[in-house]
Length: 109
Image (cartoon, rainbow, N blue to C red; front, side):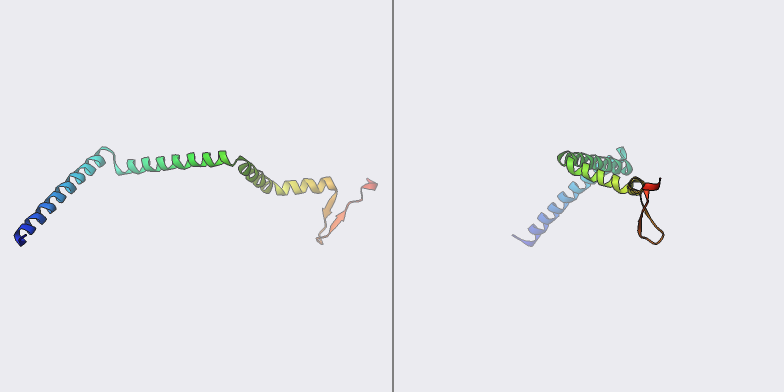
C-alpha cells in the first residue's frame, strides 16, 4: 500500500469520525434547547433520590428489628435526663452537692 493510499484512508476515517461527532454534537445541542441543563440536573437528582429512598425502604423492611432497636435507643438517649430525674424521684435518692448519693429518710414523712 502506498503512502498516498494510506493517507487517503486516514482522511476518510477522519472525515467519517468528524461527521459522526458533529451529528452527536448537534443532537446534544438540540436536546439542551428542548430541556435545559438545570432541568436535566434536577431530573437526575430526583431520580437518584428516588432510587436511594427505594433502597432504604428495602433495607429497612429486611431489618425491622434493628431499625426498631435503634429508634428505641435514640429515644432513650434523647429522654435520658427526664428519665433519670423520674427514677431519682421514684427511688428517693438524691445526689448531694458533694457528689455522693444520700438516701432520703422516708420513715419520717
